[in-house]
Amino acid sequence: MNQEKIGKFIADCRKEQNLTQETLAEKLGITYIAVSKWECGKGLPDASIMMELCKILKITVNDLLSGEKVIKEDYQKKLEKNIIDTIDYSNKKVSEKNKLIYEMIMFFGLGLIFIAFTIYPSESSWGTIHSIIGLLISTFGFINIKSGKTILKKILPGICYFMIGFILLLLLDYSNVVLNKVAPRFSYLIETGDTIITYKTPLCNVYRINRNTKNEYYIIDTKKEFKESNIPISPFNRDKSGIENIIQYKNKYVGSNSNDSHLIDNLPLSEYGYVFEIDSENLGLIIDYHITDWYINENFYLEKSLLYNSVSIFALIDNVEKITYNFSGNSYTVTRNQIEKLYPNYIDITNNKINKSNFNKYLENKMNNNNFVENIFKKIFESN
Image (cartoon, rainbow, N blue to C red):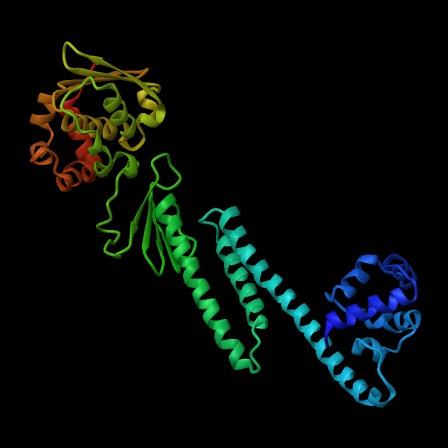
């Protein structure tokens, strides 16, 4: 069925009847834009108005579908051909309409996945549920778009589509975990402890430590080498305060305000706000925290922080000799000599500049031992 030929024939017949597109459209109860589309070969009249159109143009339906006035001798032959072409055209239109519907369904499913990833927090099970539902809806649309004649030729690509989509969701979730340090959405097992939540996913294990506190941090174990017994646990935010981060602020001299500020800002207690000053005469640091010391002393957090900060500062700033920590309640002072003599394995931590493994072993891990912290704190610090 040649739409362009039919469109030109409609235009010629309209002109023969001295009708404009607007007049013809008015007689048929449609817009002139529809008439224009016919005449440009971009569509055909609906079957519901075809008889009325032919009556106005003084032609037969057979003439209209042929795109020309059919002579008597060819009438039957043209009629049969037009019937077949009309059926094919109708089937094509139905198929195109169905394809459009299923494409909309497919993209609706993808949109649902996007919403699930952007609206729901990563630890919410609703985000996971809606992502899977979205993928199933999208797969349903994809299957019905396929033109395969048999169910098998539709189902197999659909299975592949779902599997590829699911793998992409896992990779997207993994990227989100790594980049934003959040809980994964697609966990097949979640284990909850006192301070740790373990999320087991097909691609990695994720450990959420100090959950729902200011010092919450994540460890992403792609090799799945950690167990609860050997997972690096710190009472502080390890991403900020861990040696892997603070070692960048190692400096020979106290007094580099930018470097000193960045180091203090990444150490524990900075979350409560602080100001600091340099005691140039005594090569010292004076740090004033905006909080009362007893207010933050649950589970020896104050003692752990002051020990951790002191060892870190003395290890990373070569010439600092004295640190004073001021709170609205008390002041605490410590010297390099006290740390070197009284803190166990300090020399091992600072051996060959900074030994990261020993730093974690003899400082970070020791902060989880309350008895150790209490005893060492009493030996080292002088409360003024």
